[in-house]
Image 1 (tube, rainbow, N blue to C red):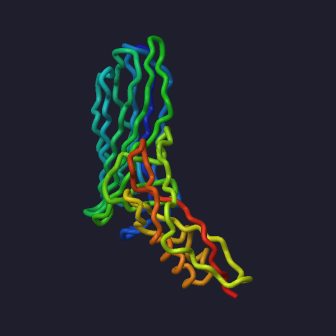
Image 2 (tube, helix red, strand yellow; image 1 turned 180 degrees about the horizontal axis):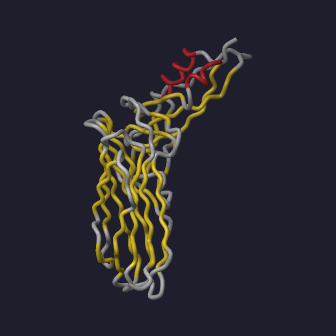
Image 3 (cartoon, rainbow, N blue to C red; image 1 turned 90 degrees about the vertical axis):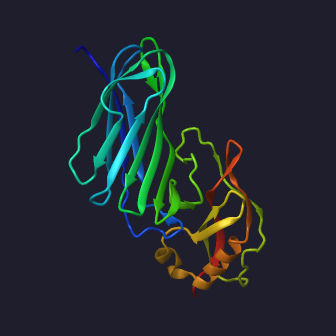
Length: 274
């Protein structure tokens, strides 16, 4: 059979399923998805192995379907581009034989859909850029182009730190290697943050604000663990800050000039308990 170079693509999803955020932002303890890619060689008009591994920390009975889309200029020699995974069963990596038929830049696209029950679905899109030369194949860093979840009819975007509610699907990811997202900016503080008595002991706390495409605030929450952070501050003071933040107007986040839904941190002083 001769020497075959291996192109290894790993699509993995690791997340703990809970009751869900019920339409509100939820803090993520870990990045929910992991993607690895590696090339050990290859060249134009030579068959290479594309190895796909799908895994995840899903409930028993969850089904994942990964689809690999090869661009024009990269042909399928053998194997299936659709991989179906039962996360409760033992699994083995899936191998396709592919062949670049000409030199140039190509993007191998991976699409993963996971259904866990009747009201929970994860949707992940990734790209693996390849530069095919006459004597070699070189890859750029693989990256996510979309990471979303639908829970109880509400759509969310996975970010580095939060599961953020959004109104509609969008091909946006904080993990995009190009770093295309321009974060929201404050335009108008319609309600000022509360002021506290002179000399009062205050803590500077971070609040997470979700901004819609039109610049209005969809939601605001206290960042981090409420039980830990608010142990020494007044709950009514936190509520006053949240009420003010929800009235603010922002310049929405953009990708290539196009407004998108996104989030940011705003820091505000909150008095400590005596």
